[in-house]
Length: 448
Image (cartoon, rainbow, N blue to C red; front, side, top):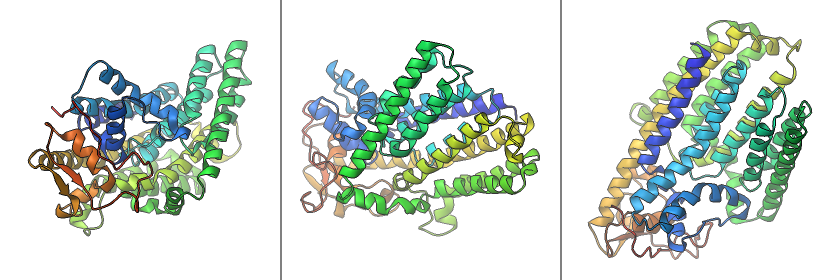
């Protein structure tokens, strides 16, 4: 397969999935429903967490603009919210792919990021890490492909740096890495203004490191963060991530032991085998055992491990460019056009296979949303979740008790329809954000 096909195929897949998942309102999954309900009720940004505020501003302004223009259709607003959440990382990864499409092994690396980092953790699309990881990937694609840092490249790097200042806690290690690669790239610049913008971008990423570090220190003993730290090593619960990680690790380990293996069809064969397993994951519950399933909440669990994998992949990209004449046999092999082409093909196979569980989960989500809306629109008053099959398949894939009230109000088509709640006072078991878990009024809004 030519690199052009791998590039175009990955781009089409990115935008095709983004369009489909926006249509299914996937941004309402888990925290997304509460975020949107809070935005509509206050008609302002839901930037409850200052360390991630810039991502909130970037993804919420289209909805708020429509609300200011008088739009009250929550179905349309949910699709726009979802579309923005999905379009931003898709656009950043598209930019990354476009920058490296003629760069051999770099193209394979960026496709690998999409297949191993983004797709297996992106169902929880409201998570700020999706955009933070995509932005850092774009930084490396820009920094590693310019012979000199032009003012255009510098401006893009600065925009990404300003966005990432308040984006996600993973910037505590991705921030210094991004600043370092920008500084390394700026040394070659012949444009003073471009170099100045690049220096400003590097400082912005160092600022992101400070913001992330201070946030981690501040919330280190917070109950929510203690729980999050305890789940870092539970990424194995994400079957999509585990399968693709295993396949990618196999290719990497064999390449380290025997670099000449990359010159043959081995990487493509390994990717095809991994892809076959990945394509089969939606049916594991029926074929293997009831608990072997693709599980959307596990995307949240795997995000930290995915960030670590991203740092490794980006560092490998930098090493590849910085040492074009390295004597290390593996690096020398990666500079061969045929090897780079086969690696790009192998990574595209993983991305293509990863689309199958993604589409399957979206179909389950769409069915769940229709079922949940049916409960709300055909009843009145309070409906207690423990009286519904929330813990049965497939409802259990999407159940999150403290978001039921917000989702109920969003999908109502008329006042007075039911609100699904749990038997919880939200004080003994509070959500992370105090404004979530409550019943928003949303006067004048309805699902059409």
